[in-house]
Image (tube, rainbow, N blue to C red):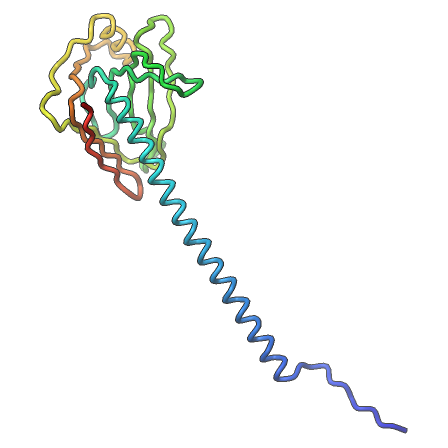
Length: 201
């Protein structure tokens, strides 16, 4: 009778070393791919943030460049214009209509909020078509500072002043200054600050 060799059920030392080496190589590849994905995501988020803040600044610059007057005082959370930079609410295309344009930070709590652009037409007393849109999120403050010395007081006309009083809901006389040739706009986000001086004319 031929004696049969007993078969063992375990792995040899060489097999264990090969398995460990292969697992280490695979884990290294997974970690490298994960790190690359995280790096690309951070790049895309920062690029998107820069693009969005650039778009907001361009929108504010367009409203100021088409502006007839800065209305009232500028605060650290809002400013208001009378501008020929009206935007159609349905198509988002510029229609150059006379409008009251207000930028303000709306907060739901004590943290940062959203930057709103609110618009009311001033050239049609029957259909002012009030509407607002969110132009940026994660905003703490927005500040408009006059840099040049040509922001003289300006009279808007009785009908426009009356509509402004009605739109503001206070009924008080609204002080207006000419949009100056140079202003500084500063937007404080949660993780960055965008500060730009604008030459309007």
